[in-house]
Amino acid sequence: MMKSYEDIVKFNKDNMDAAVAAGTTFAKGVEDLSKEYFGYASKSFDTAMEATKALTSCKSPTEAAALQQKLTKEGFEGFMAESKKMSEMTTALFKGAFEPVGARAKVAMDSVGIKA
Image 1 (cartoon, one colour):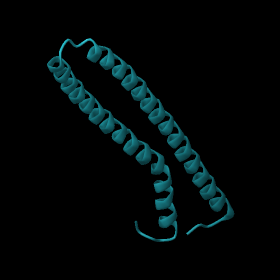
Image 2 (cartoon, rainbow, N blue to C red):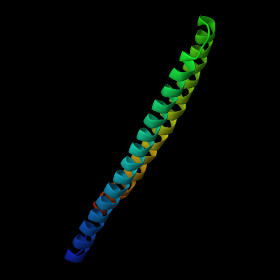
Image 3 (cartoon, rainbow, N blue to C red):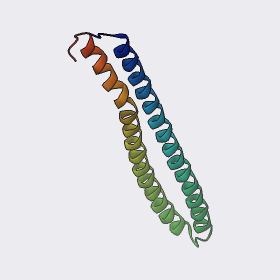
Image 4 (cartoon, helix red, strand yellow):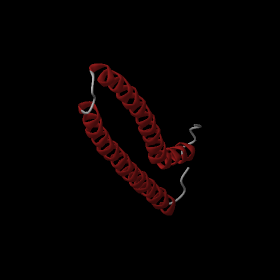
């Protein structure tokens, strides 16, 4: 159990430090996710423009169909790779942001005798 006023003040200060650390980590992670998302969106737009130019230069319907199939496959594979990357970034974001809070919760439970 906590023994003195100084212990309570330190406990609360440590809780606030953990909250600030969690918030800072979360904000940085959201910023990184936003940059990744908008980078991918820009790249996708550029790819779509290039694909449109390539499709309009096709000489036959067969050539256009083959190109469309290739572009669709590449687009899907790119989307899946980006989705995996964003998912991993999101998981790391939440894990990192809630780690300081979880550690403080464990300290709080330990201080009142609850085993986590």
